[in-house]
Amino acid sequence: MSQFYEHDFQFEAAANLEAHRLVKLTGSREVNYLAAADTDPTEAIGVTMHKANQNDIVHVRSLKAGGSVMVEAAGEIASVNSLIKPADSGKVQAAGSSETEPVIGRNLETAAGDEAVIECWLLPMATTKDTS
Image (cartoon, rainbow, N blue to C red; front, top):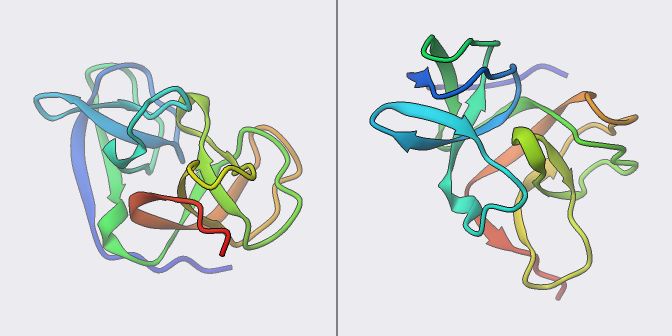
């Protein structure tokens, strides 16, 4: 599938970062991975576009840019168009059945397992799962 995008930004990497991972601001113009344990997934600002070492500049595709983006999965996501949520190390995983579980978007491709890079539609702000 082809990706459509509008905006990339540059930040300093607060740690060694891999490509295709969700990140959040951690300091003055620094980014680090969003994690499953983060209590507020709305902190996600975008997805890393390439690998970067700590203190290097990393390009980040803004979640507000619209369009789709490639993101690394934390494990198998068997169905297309599933609700996805943050996983550890900036990866994504399929959301569970909880109505209050935060979600960050939908996958446009299946993921065979950990480290699969899949196309996703990401929401500019995380939301809770709507089961109605």
